[in-house]
Length: 392
Image (cartoon, rainbow, N blue to C red):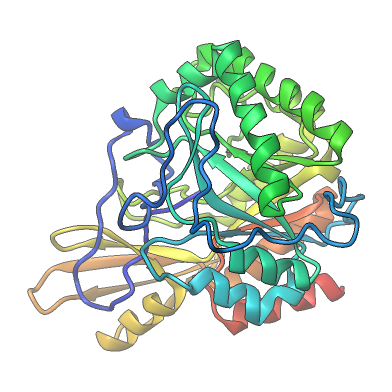
């Protein structure tokens, strides 16, 4: 559930999107792994430890096991995604420390899974984040993904279509989760071929059979869509109805309606998000659905387009004296500016006001709550809105 690493400056440099031949959909850009490869262990059957061996594992809590699958959240569940975009990135950790009282669960973007089902931690396991989360009553989930210079379709195919690879993944998860203190997983396998839809369902079915008896929580992150097109190269492989029967909770990635590699436009318009939610609840239990919320924006223009965390978008507008406008129909902010080289830019982003508009859909459609990509890109005003939403 991811976006490109945001630029932390207000200058004109930034990253560019990846074409969809690497598995990146037109409509969703992907996260940049942290600088360096982390502690990767590619030996078959041995899950990557992802951290210094001198750092002790996180405690499992009083009973030594997972807390079990959460009960219905009555629309108030908040799942936050954490990530480290570069060595020393503490933004997600700081968000958990400062605003964790408004969060029920986190999913750590940590584990790359290869085509053989081996887990590799591209960044060190965030044990301090997990430990802090647990002291605040936040339930940690291990996020597994196929992001490798874009979401890799071939890796997904190799994993999903091999019973041996799927079982290897399950076996490794059953080692990693208790060792690191996770209460469950978030399956973020993106860009699967439509022909592999049944194989994806097989993976979820096997995960559920292995995890549920042990009390582990099975969640997934899947593309947003307003109808099912089995020929769609990005979302056609995700059968909402079948997924809804198996997963405990489903995060629908209602962001990147316009992506960094495409034409300028809103990250997520209110009308589009509502259409996605309306379709989702027609296919799966509403009480399992988490609506995706973004905390970032994109700056289109100049030599390269780039992603921006919300505070940096505001700093950019201030730097160039740009008026931040509000689009009444889309319920999102945007602005335009001309940089020092004379290049015209257009910036669309999400803020506390656009989040507040979307939160009204939770009650309207009886959803479980929200999932935020990602923690550390927002400010305190965003949490004021979340606090009000949870209180009411």
